[in-house]
Image (cartoon, rainbow, N blue to C red; front, side, top):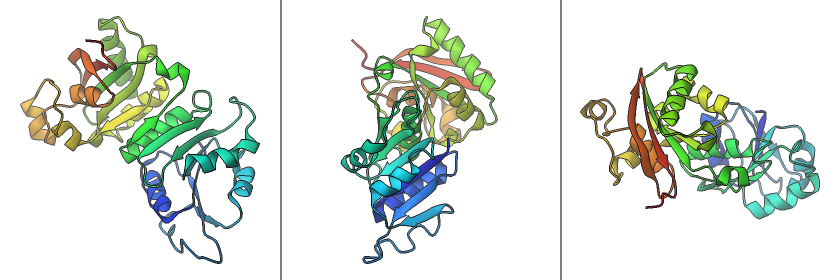
Length: 269
């Protein structure tokens, strides 16, 4: 996606830098800096595509709205709603609009969530910031399956997709039921996983090692995994920690170079 990030505060610039460092594209970053206050001098020095602006935000957005596939606003949602309102046409041509608060706690898919890709973009940003993606699209709300994955380095997209499909078949589920693929942070940039996520159009969630280390839910433990990365497991805790009220419905399955576990959200006991 051709992406722009727009921010208006110093904290917002720092959050924007975190996004730029890990997102799989090179966004243009627009930073507000008024001439009279000189508030964010040099804040974007480490950003290759930083552009300072001092015109009213609604004017900038009016110019940029149709030039990008997605726009990430690092600011309050109310501000974003007001400035994009005059530009909105329909969900088939409007860019994906994602809103991030200044310090990156919440990532909201605001506009063109499904058709425009804002849901996927929100999940990507949430993974980068280790935050929560807020998705309200009806087509996503009924998906309650999370696939946890552990894998070796260099695994291919084809191998990942084949393992996921086989694991789902074992419990009579389809890929359309899956809301998230989830893995551990050290696999966050594994090309095969990222490609599989994009090809399946299922967001990749990333769980940190400390989160797994403090996971209180029951999961299979491996001394080999503990020795290698410092935690007792990957696929099962990754699935369990990626959602709310989760329960494993398929324990760890081993495939060549891959382990798969499946959890259901909002599990009814």
